[in-house]
Length: 373
Image (spheres, rainbow, N blue to C red):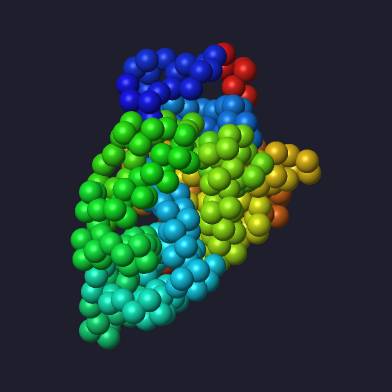
């Protein structure tokens, strides 16, 4: 087994071949229409698994949850200073944004300042923008969305800027063998404390590489992102801390850049707990959350939380419900915050008259890991 996928030593092992537990039910009146199975794991500041339901070691593709870590390569290169990048601009480069006008204007300013053409973007436009209001407006006005509307355009822009700053060719920045992608790969390996050659890679839907890790390792990486200086133990980790702190602060300071202004989980969570957590989802129903010290109550240490819904949860209802429920169970959400997130906690469906007709209901318990041993 490649070291990037090795299981961490622990007492509890999920039974081989056992089905994942049901995390969320879709209910319509008294009828349970569907059930979503999955896994949740929460780790402490030192990386030990504290609470879990399902298999903490299930291997998942990071997909867009990798974005904050690849941004380390750009920051370490000095490109951020060379192009005078602002925190909101860094946030949109760690984002899966909704393609709203504020995202487009932000990236347009970056390209203009760097003297680069938007035509370099290789992310395409398929299925974009994510924001329905923006999509309908573009369709009404007869405007075709450009690549800046793609949710990964900021992610791609970071590779283009890094390439220009380092003097590498910019036209084929997206190829796995390109120096910019090797630099991103190296950053991911260092964050996850594995050897570069042991990384398990795949191609994301936007064309850039992504990586696979056990779910508990994802939670640990996000605990590191939440509190880089506090979590860092080795010299290599301490060297990463300044860049990770900038990424974290940029994301928490401009949560609408990380996702969008309407109905996006990452933005909603960071706005509900300002300065207390950093959140970044990935496609196929992965959510990764880093909790700052104090987020779970006065004196609490940093923590990481990762959720994976097995069926990919195309509509996002189970992902939203499970993430909010998990945060509530670990003590990160006060009653007022939980009420403010009600639409994510129990996502409703409506009939044509706007009357609620059903809802997604979380139904799991995050058990202390010692109780599962």
